[in-house]
Image 1: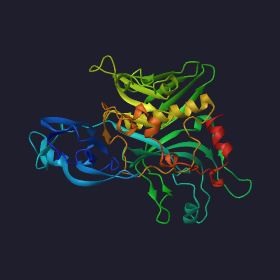
Image 2 (image 1 turned 90 degrees about the horizontal axis):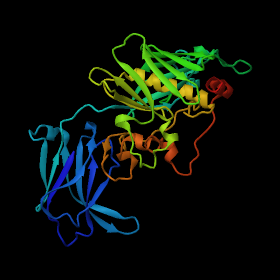
Image 3 (image 1 turned 30 degrees about the vertical axis):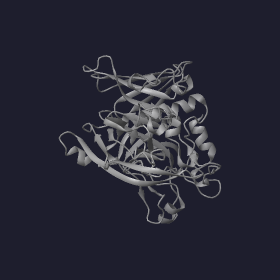
Length: 423
């Protein structure tokens, strides 16, 4: 999207007036301000250049006047709006609107294309073998029949906060009753990962307690080879991930059912996801959090980056042609393996409760980007340039507020989960 301006502003209040660009949806907190003191021009002058998700619906441009005072308030004088749908109905894909008797604004777009998918896994309650959350609400609904099995659970959200999948890791078997009876750890090779497609089915009496979707679309099963110092994950997609546990981590991917496309996992942000070397965030420890999935094919003999994973934050970006279930299994399997290798909870897998996420629509992930702008706001840049800031939860950004701790004893003992992830 490009926004241009032509004309002259009233010189009487020009020092106090400025332009503000806002998104109509998905990024309501967006405020891109431009001073008008040096904008008088007879020819079209480019004001903003950005990339917008189609769900933003369009842009609004406001003329505002500073009111002064310690709060730096301003009042709106005029505004105009540009809708993506209206612009797509124009052959030229552009619209011109009058902002003032002497000022014209023109907005131009390129034809929309399908963008890469953005997914992140966020902590949620422990679930039982059937997929129900471990909760007194579920117990009452089942006439207090104990819930069998314990699975660590993560909800997968898209860029707009919509629930898409539920990822579960099997940890324990058995039930919990007051007294000595408590869930026990399953064997290492039985600690599988499964992906279920869809959103939670919440109970009528509790909006945060419910059942995972029934449709299982993928699984990953681990195998450990102690003598060869490696861990092998076999995915239901036919892919096999081998992690060599030497001083330098080495990842190997191959597919047992197809040899047409070869895939590689490269440590760091590589190829189209690379970050400039002079960036302050480009250090070795941060690069280790990222893995780039590269596929070679007759069309891309040198390889093409089809996905970027951050196994520490459980976030991923991948092209529409890439398999979402495979990417989720890959990210979670690597997070599990890295937790075991480092012998610490590097990916936050021990968190067993739902964490409050930012309000949907306020600043949706990747909805507006200014990648070529010197803007210091990481939310207006590709997420992988400062992933920790972009993906932080609402609880983490609240100042002077401690995150609540503690888990229900019905989940099982803390040692059960710690020993399962950090044996």
